[in-house]
Each structure stands twice: as C-alpha cells, then as structure tokens.
Length: 332
Image (cartoon, rainbow, N blue to C red; front, side):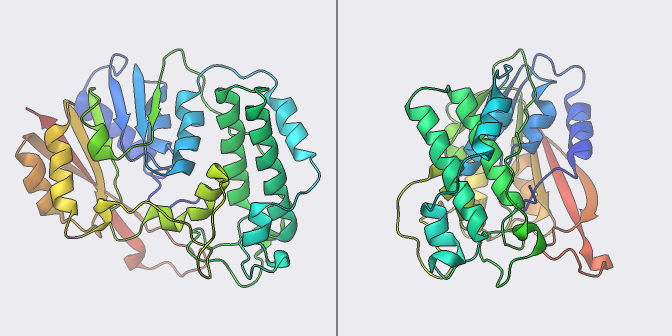
C-alpha cells in the first residue's frame, strides 16, 4: 500500500540500527510495534524475534496485522476461497451506495463495478464467518486481501481524505482479489487495537518500536474508507467525502503530544526503545532528546530519504528530501 509514514523504504536502515543497538541474537526478544500501521516493521522482525506485539487504533490496521503478524500457520484452501470470491456476481451494497458515482452519491472513490465487487466480496466474507465456514485466521486473511486489493483500484491521490474528479487509470482497472500472503512462524504473536498509552501499562518486553503520527494528519480521517470496508457497519456518511466518526490521536496535537510521549516512555517496561520521527514533526529533535535522556542512555541515528508524494509526477528537487530520526534509548 502507498501509505503515509510507511517504513517500507527505511526497513533495511531500521533493521540494521535496531540490531546494532540491541546487539547479539534477537531470538529470545519480545518486539513491540506500538503504532503499527500496515505492519511493515513488525513483519521485518517477525522471523527474527521470539514474539511480536503489534498495536494500532485503526480497524483497517488491526485487520492487516491480524493477518500479517498474528497469522502464522499455513491456511488450507485459501486459493479456493480467493477464486470463489473473485467469481461472485456484483452486488449493490454500502460501498457502491455511498462511494461510487453511479449510485447518485456524488462521490467517486471507486468505479461503479469495483464498488459493487467490494460489496459482493465483503458481504460473502462476513457470511463465511457468521456461518462458521471459516475460522478467524482465514477471516482476517481474506479481509486483509480485500482491503489491499481495493486500495490498488481506489480513485484517490493515495489518501482517502478526498477522491479524484475523474477516474485515474488504476481506478479504471477491474478489481482482482489478490492474496495477502503472510510469513509462517512457529512462534505466537499478539495483535491489539488499543490506545498505546493505555496498552503500555499491560505489556512488557525487550524492544519497543514507536512510530506515532508526527504531524496534524489524522490517520482515521485519511484512511476512513479502509476502516469502512474493514468494519462494514451501517452509518450515515458525512459531507462531500462521506466521512465516518474517527479516532483522533493526541500525537497529532501540538499542545498534548509532549506530555503523552513522556508518559509512554516513563511507563514502558522495555529495555530498548526506538522512536521513528522526522525533521518535520511536531516535536523537535532536541525536545525528543530531552525527554528520552531522562530515562537512560540516549543515541540518535539519521537517514535522508525522499518525501512521500501523492503526485508522483512532481519534479524532484533538493527540498524533496526529508530526514528520518531514529531516537534510541537504553532504559535504566
């Protein structure tokens, strides 16, 4: 997925620096990805640690991580379920009614046929679950597959805070449900959907990785359609974009982020804490250093990379570079 704040391009950097800071094998370590998003970082470490704890407030993120992190055993017949779902007749459901132009909604997040296909697949997945034809592992695998497949044909500039006036080329393609393949693992991994500052008081481990929102952009608003596909609940979409009620993170609020961040660090029962933040964040580099240094030995690693752009045709300039700060704390 083309996701704001994604650490996919920084995965090698993060893996290298985290392993170097902790030292030795990670095979006996518990790794927590507290603001997991699409689960990229948890996936990096899933095969290398004893256990991954993954958490995020957003429901689409919970679904993705239930599949990519918690799912570990091979799923039999998954290909036949993917095939059956791809062959379903189109259905006019919630997505078509509220997020496709042909329904008269005035919104164009998907082509009419793709909206109907999302409705058909989503309804059938829920039917599989309610009739107990599939277990939870298969349910989250199929639902994660739908979320990612729908995202590939969404008529947006990467985020869902707005839709495009005309269908872009990827949005004109027919939606094909593609499997969200996960890594098999012999270990058990846990996935939560809680406020990080609350969850930190209930868990413990060795490595805590933090990648909170760093500016005012609320993920619940920017990816509300994915939450709607994941939940598939009945509500009255609001405004031009069909917004739903969404979570508002204190990490997006300038007057609250410092206090919340320090509480998280203070209450963390983890030896090593890593914070991904960039030079455009609400908290400055020095503010983060001041807070983390209170609780142990502090270090900083920096990596330059290209900014996330919704318009890939933008001319590359020096200003397109931003800097990822990996703040490191070895807690006393």
